[in-house]
Image (cartoon, rainbow, N blue to C red; front, side, top):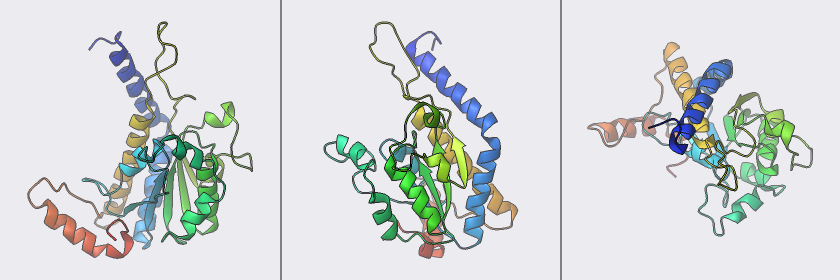
Length: 251
């Protein structure tokens, strides 16, 4: 595939971003993975949240082969993905004050747990309020966002702050404002977003770090195996049973 084609240029841009997060976010990834391992070792529970397309990366670490069985999706009705009709409603709900409070108050999250919040822009009321309230409840918060938005956009939260301002740890996806890697003279708008590729990779790097950190402490990481390999279902059944009190996507 020629690097001069749109496909080649996009893949090169995505690879470049992956190289950047590998090199520039290494310390933050290590710290985030260690924080999750600490939480597991201390008996805490793990949650992840993302709205709209940011939810794709969040869902990628929940109940999947090779992943930590303890990752639970903190779902907000109407904003997880684009299945709500009309799809624009999801974007509107991200700007509603008070929604995050209601979700957290009715969730099983409690002090000592950890919450990963994924929001590319980090400017909407929902992720900001989610981080603020989660920390007030005693959760550790890891934010995955593009820090550039905080200097090139205005916050939509009443405080004027961004997700990055209310986290124990921040992972910067390095995605440019607008989330489009390509421009062409005959195409009227920038196109080809890379945020899902990069953010999903960042989160999987954190999960890998957490699993290795647990193993280094002599704790077997609660990992899931593919149900499409022999023995996978039996393995997963054992893990889900052992950690049933910290897994909420089964109920």
